[in-house]
Picture: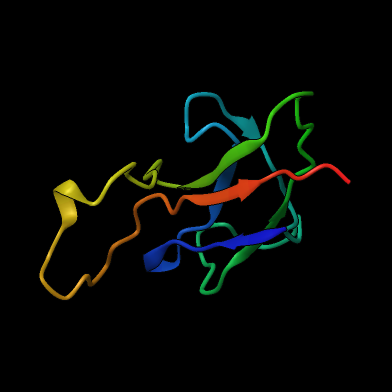
Length: 102
């Protein structure tokens, strides 16, 4: 479960989740009110995703990305948006996960 947000009141229309650092993607389920006006959304949109972890995988690189109503999608790196204070950095955030068997 997570949340996505876009500026300017634009609603989120798609969230995708990856466990291999962005090589492959799986659509997440948006948890939005179907009556919500997608052109006037001023807060985050919750999403959830159930991911099957392949046998034998010990480490994952969990990433998610969102796309808004204007088809703006988060960039994969901060190269094009870098600034000294790190402001408005909405690039993918990688979460390393280690699977340990009991």
